[in-house]
Length: 359
Image (cartoon, rainbow, N blue to C red):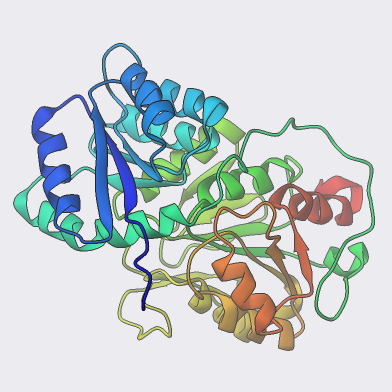
């Protein structure tokens, strides 16, 4: 006799009765999901979280009494729970606050639909996102103090660890990330020197329309040159470039970045971490460090393996610090990396390897 698994319980938090009703209808039509309750402000959300113990929370940002950022912060203190931020792409302040909520523990940002087609798309994607969120780790992404730790031995997996000196030649850092990635990327970048001798290229799986906000948040918070990549731009030392929606970010000889919207990828994602790593393996492997951070699925594993085989330095985020260990685990299983560390330590490894701190 097959034992039926309990439904994933969801708490809906939004000050709009209409939005709550639509989300309730979308979730209510899925057999393995269940709406446990609703809240119209952040204070109610905290109370309902304690009382109902939901598996996942859908959190609006702009609300009366207590906003979504404050509610996320409070929930992560009293009862850590996977939180999906649902907000408008058109409101820049809400987008920035959404990424700040990720700093406090939210794991994903979802665009609030602006037309019927958007709601139809959300109806197809929301159940998958909720299921993934229910499996995510919580309470792992709390802010860390920006203090330098004493250099310590690396704890590698697979074929052993790579010495710090192996990173000294690095001139490009290619990063792939998905669920939980924005804060992991932020944490890694915060450990790099102010003027590193390398360019950083980032493929972050994120809802279309949020990549500009993601780049702006990183640029403002870290005081770095972070922008969405442009086709034909040269990846210069110190620059951080984020892949745009709907196009693969590729690195060619001489550090030229190309955006390819037509390329058939090995992954369902566009942009794809696999494509970024494969381009680095073809153009400048011994000058590249490939890093695969937290995320669901397997994107990046094949490309990272190719980069390692071509002589590149490859690393993944460790399981303990990952919100979702899917992508790093796939890379380790494929023999694509031998170093697994928290993002903070990956950044420190790179920083201390560059001569004079990268200046």
